[in-house]
Image 1 (cartoon, rainbow, N blue to C red):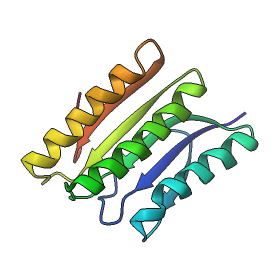
Image 2: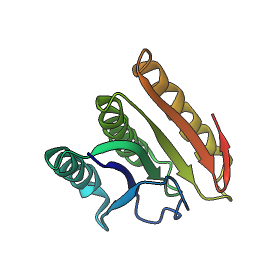
Image 3: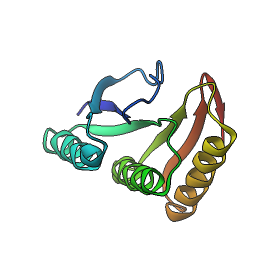
Image 4: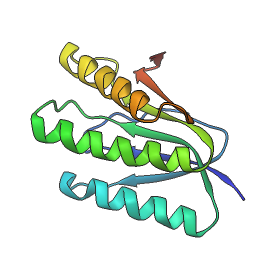
Length: 135
């Protein structure tokens, strides 16, 4: 069974760079309303093929309105759920280097909320602003 890294990019998100030594699968969709559905389909496809999702990346765009934050939280939650289902792994929440202070705060708050939701699992959340990791 292969380990897979799944990169999910919000429309307008920055490419996260190298994320893992495993096979990479990318889910992206121009219609932001469809991103969650496409992500769930990709995760299910990987599961059916017996592949383990060890690393997931959500490349966030610059949007910080309520609807965008809610969509981002849903996608991130499903990605971390898929990583946790494999026993262990990591979700990266990634932004561009020049992310606004508000976006950085929102992404950090999301990482904290996800960490609390998935406490007790071997799945972790890491935030990456450009090329720099933080938590």
